[in-house]
Image (cartoon, rainbow, N blue to C red; front, side, top):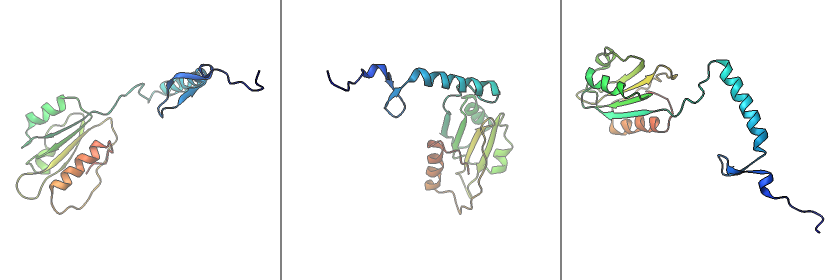
Length: 154
C-alpha cells in the first residue's frame, strides 16, 4: 500500500462547475453560508430576491408620437433607446412618460434626435457633453453604451 493515497474526488467536489468553470469544494458548507447571507439581505427589506436581467428596447421610430411612445412603454422594458425622434427636446419632454425618466437630445436642424427612457426604479443621471452635431457615429456609440449595460446616459 502506498504511504499516501488520494481519496475519490466525488467526496470533495460537487459534480457541478461554478461560474469560472472550476469544481466547487465543500458546497454543503458554502450553501449554508450563502443561505444565511441571502436571508439577511432579504430581511433588510431593500433587496429584490431575483430581479433578473435588465430588459433593453431599442427602436428607430422615424418621428416620435405619443402613441408610439405609449406602445414602446407598454413593452415593459427597463431601458428604452429611441433614435430618429424628429422632435425638439421640449416637445419630447412634454410627452407623458409614466414611470420612466426621460433623457432626450434633439438634433440641430431637420430630423434626427435621440431619447432614452429609464425606469424610475433604476438609478440614472444625465452627463452633459458638448457635441457639435448628432452624427451616425454618436448614435452608434449611444447604442453601444446601452448594449454593454453601462447605464451612462447622454
